[in-house]
Length: 87
Image (cartoon, rainbow, N blue to C red; front, side, top):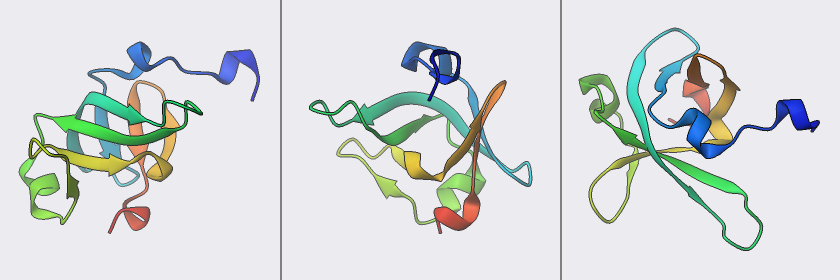
């Protein structure tokens, strides 16, 4: 991954999370990561949509919905996730 391809967490905070088909999940509220390696593990949603709440997404200990970072396929104006990798 080149330097231009790297994204810093503050760059994706509050971006809208959508699926490839355009369904809104909510916004990036926080990110969990492995402290030893820096690997991103989960996106923690804020303001989740009723669509996201209807899915059986994993929740953190505060009840916030989480999307596995492995489902992220693109980051730009939106964080695009692959719905097939989530459900």
